[in-house]
Amino acid sequence: MAPPKLYYIEVGPPSRAALLAFRNLNIDVEVVPVDILGGKHRSPEYLKVNPQHTVPALDDNGFYLADSRAISTYLVNSRAPGNSLYPTDPKVRALVDDRLFFDAANVFPRVKLISYAALVLNQNLVDAEKKEGLYEILDFMEIYLEGRKYFAADFPTLADLSLLSNYSSLVHWGLNVSSYKNLQAWYKRCESLPGFAENEVGAKTYGMLMQQRLGKDFNWERK
Image 1 (tube, rainbow, N blue to C red):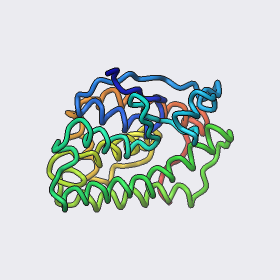
Image 2 (image 1 turned 90 degrees about the vertical axis):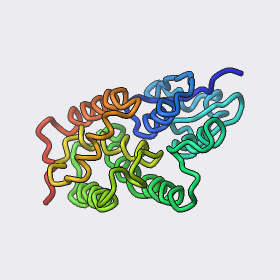
Image 3 (image 1 turned 30 degrees about the vertical axis):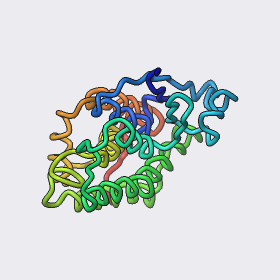
Image 4 (image 1 turned 60 degrees about the vertical axis):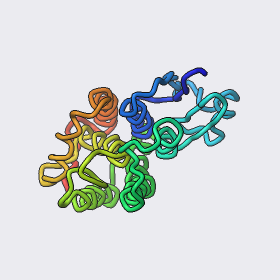
């Protein structure tokens, strides 16, 4: 059986989260870059895989998924059941799911709202409300790490991989994270995770693109 295909864009946090799952589970994958600027995400071939024309998407020998969190949980359930990244203990798994849903419903939508305006709509301003929204999610993340080394347990889980992809993006956008001691310690611990350096490359590129659009000296300070 051929390895799964992961349709991927380097700068996208969800793409990087899905790839982090592959790396941490040590699962072979064919990474297929998607040329968004060239409109390849709207090609008939890609729409067969993901009608929403979003990236990432998974093609596991004809089985398709289009959400990075669904991809990561599927990988554990189908190829590594019982892996500590998605623990079988009901309460710990529920915490992992809770943090994944937090990422899906609160974190990434706020990140995407700002980056879409900057990189697609060519806007070079971020209003105070949207900026505050980013710091609010950092506040929540800091609280979730109180008394824990990682977001759902004292060991890494899929929740950490998903949140890492977004947090690293905000770091390289230039947000001031100096007051978030729990987050800074967690980010340091994540350096030992497989794929961390690879994720950093994409996050840094994302940050460079945002700085080019908003200006290198754009003020991300919280008001």
